[in-house]
Image (cartoon, rainbow, N blue to C red):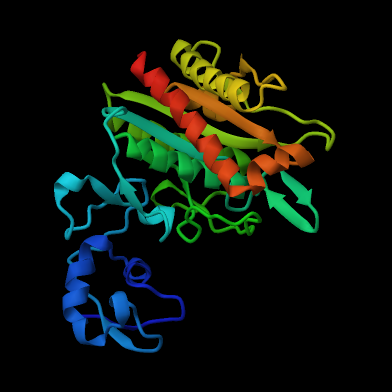
Length: 320
């Protein structure tokens, strides 16, 4: 069995994931190290711990989760390490999206940060904020029973509650593939992953959403808007359903101003043109505008974006 030393900040789940294990190994780990744990099964920095033996490395790179064995299956609890320690526990609340398969793509990533805006002394990178909203959306969809694949991934980030999200370049494509330096190849990588998975779910209700943040003049305040393929009635229907949700939310929460987000077709966008599932391309705002930046840098607002998109998705699925 492998013996490892706990580092500063390590918890059991962090230690397991670092060595290719999952929460399913928790009980065995506790049994092996029962005399070497602190209060509430905490780890001691610098101490050596024994890892459970495994016949294969279990390292899921999708939003597919593993149930914790100590909880009854009827509790409908799943664990998704990609969401980070704070949010990895996902309780399935209902089955509103049972049978639906979603592919979520946070725009850019790896060598390409996308649009960059200035927020006081800080730089805001499109890929970091789009990715955070994407993970939040993935988690909400799973709470309603959906099957979810996150195509761009960063195993170190998880869902973050900071206002300023650190820029990095360690995002990878689905299945751990390095993101290409070539823009065309980057887009082809994620589309190929989506289309391959689409074939495996043939006959199921499947949709793809790609989340981005636009870059315009600093004075240009814009609302969330949507693109779909001009020949995709299903893509248009999904876009319009999410758009209607945003319109309703603005009428309720900001009645003093109208919502100006739009739905239109833009078939030239690579992921819209070549992805097999009906696709919606979402622009969440202008990363250079002070008002729009509040939509991203406030964590509760990022969660609200995910919640509202999810509501629109549920409405679309209900009316399929």
